[in-house]
Image 1 (tube, rainbow, N blue to C red):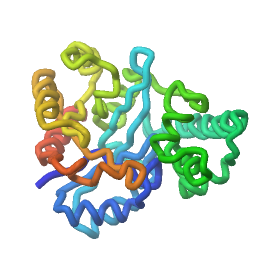
Image 2 (cartoon, one colour; image 1 turned 120 degrees about the vertical axis):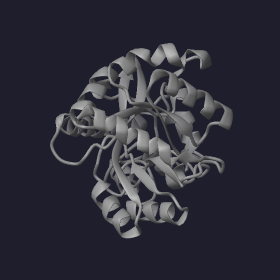
Image 3 (cartoon, rainbow, N blue to C red; image 1 turned 90 degrees about the vertical axis):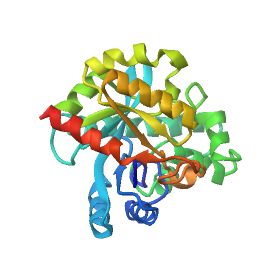
Image 4 (cartoon, helix red, strand yellow; image 1 turned 30 degrees about the vertical axis):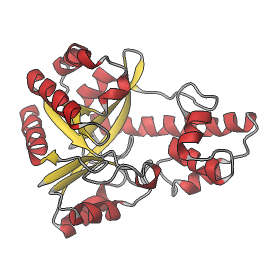
Length: 282
């Protein structure tokens, strides 16, 4: 059996509710999944109830955007439970920062002559977890862009006219807060970091020393050879090769639950090793 440890729902920038994600995962024979919505744990309760009914394991998680060497990095955080805690408490601050950034992005778009309201974006997001894909969807609906990708390329991607940065935890701080909260961190889609192919080991050694638990080796968009290469690096660093589809529903239609683009298999052993890593934190 296999697992999928990188999934997004309507509680951030996905298009499916937690119950639908669980149902699809169970239909595809996955033994466990992790719901990893951006910067929040709001969908975990619903996902956990659905998973219990479906007989599938549910890992409580989130995906954090942090700062690393002055650039953005995404960290998947596993076993982070809703409620108070060192990292959980900081999530509220991060969500407030995201909300303020989103409202300013509306102003930026309006200044560019793009008629869009925050209420429209809020409605597209279903009233929670507003992110740039929701902006992109509204831009497409209103004829300001041809596709989601076009909206990002024209307005929303880093460096484009409507993009605005937001407050982020430093990577080392986030890793430490996660460990204090009984959670394990893994670098998401490491290809987005601009690290040369041969430089992953040296680039991430310092984060491993700070408590990093894994690297997302089994990623939906990777070729099998690159997945194996990253898994070997994880083994050498003594951390876990994690993995997942990065499912976002119709916002990323090429990536499907459990299989990515069709050939992804994240072994059960990835979750087993994460559990072992977590237990060493206690």
